[in-house]
Image (cartoon, rainbow, N blue to C red):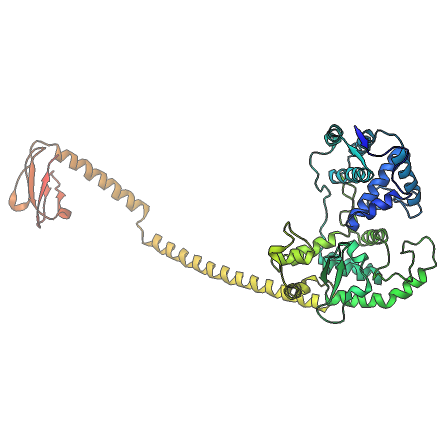
Length: 467
């Protein structure tokens, strides 16, 4: 059961309920995701209203600035109508399930519409929440099989970019900033005149963090800033562009929308031969957000995890209380990573040559070790050959074994005989089995005579028992 705390005919809503709700969201990323979710929900209920073009990476038709007022009107209508909101949400989710949409996408879409309705005091009972939860994916996870962005791929992409996109892509790749953080960057927050080159990212919570850039990105930013004002002024009178409405007064470093950036990035991926859609999610497998993953993977090989996470702008459950690092230490850590984050300049060449030198040295050391091991094996092989040469021939061993067997048999025959002749002077003995005899001989010298006699050759006195 859905409840509403106000009268249906007099809801406390303005003429722009979507905008009001979006402005209450904390981050730009959440605002964008929730706006998309609400627009898709209203499209599901009332039919298609969007006039934008279909995205390259997905099959979703984009809503334009001109479409927003129409959806605001539909939102007012929906909030005022007497509807079964629970069933609307369930049907909305089912359309994504039937289309086999990614589980994470379904979760975000339903969260957006539920948060929107709750913002206007439309709540769901426990029973209704269970109904909705029952049709949601049991586990939401990333399903797109993403491709990695590498230095080699970026080296192939950069020549295809104009000055604005080159500055943007290089800055994203070397700073770890999110796309919306960079698109909201103001010129006054950019500090690239002296080292360490950096810019400040400002959040709506009044918090700020510092992000660093390489010498290469700094040069690209300087080139773009020289052309930026003329670029914005030239387009200020052009209708239908996706730039900020007040282009002349827009003080952002990159005065264009995220959809413009996405379109340009996908276009250059197609030209470079890197564009690919995931077979299941239909998403761009090398989206511009993968530049942030490139940054994390690169610095993670050089510095410790805590500093890498801080440079990424991540905050742990304790607000980074236990991994607080002075800013100068972070700047020093970034300096250690700068060569690896450089894509095309001389520092990249120096870094690659140094890396090749290290690899060559390791290979040389490995060859030296292998050569020493080979020499050792050759010496051991010679020793084995020498030992084999000194060993008796197989036929000699066979003769000795046969003789030993004959002697053992003869000894048994002598031991079991009733009488053995005795001749003390010459070492002959007589007796029967079980008798104890004293032999004046060393144990090693006792032998068997040719006629079954026990022969001694002198030595210490020993006692032997005839068996």
